[in-house]
Every structure is written in structure tokens, then in C-alpha cells.
Length: 157
Image (cartoon, one colour):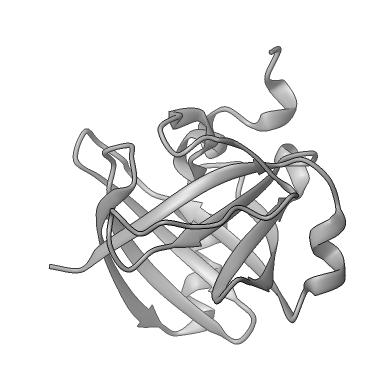
């Protein structure tokens, strides 16, 4: 089984920007989600994929990712996915032997910035950079399928 082990954090300031090594434009949409799985299509530059991920909230989840033709992915985003589409720029930031992924959301989720770090095991200790704030790994509303249905710009708290 493919497993993703990841922690999510809010970002407190923009000091991470001076350490960016790469940026990636991402567009992703969600099909039907249920109590067990979320299914998404993602376009990242010149590649595209279908992804199946368990919907349990927390540090460890099952995940399967399959490359598909980019033209098919764009058609799926346009005609099959729930709206709004998730739009974000992912910045890669190395720190202390790890690579952080900083997602700066756009469109209906503008204003939200989340730092994610993938781990090798659930007990792996991570030194948090000074720009990392509150951990939101266990908060459903910071997951992309939730943001698709409940955009950040509509939050009242």
C-alpha cells in the first residue's frame, strides 16, 4: 500500500521566500468524495495525474497517484470536477535536511498559505523553521477537498 506521512502548518511570515529553490503552478479538481476516499485530478506544468487518497484526517494516509495525459486532465477539470478548482503555487524550501512545500492558494482560497512536510515515518522529529506556525494536520478544513467545497474566502473565523 502507498502511504503518505505528512504534517501541515500555517505560515506566520514570508521569511521562507528567500530560500525557495523551485515553484510549481498547480490546478486540481475533485470528483466524488465519500467517507473513504477523495479522488482528484491535478495538472502541474506539463504533467498530470489522478490521485486516490484516504480521507482520514491526520499524519498518515493511503495514497495512490497515476500519471495521465495533460489534455485529459484539463478536460476533466473543466467538465467533471466540482467547482471551484483549487489553484495554488507550490514553493519548495529546503531546511535542516528536509524540503518543505509551501502552498500559496489563489482564486477562491486566496490568503491561505500552508506549509507541508512529508516524513519517512510517523515518529520522525522535525525542527520547525521560524516561519512555521500552528499545526493544522488534524483540522479537516485545511485539506484541499474541504477547500473545494468551503473556500477560504468564505470562512468567517
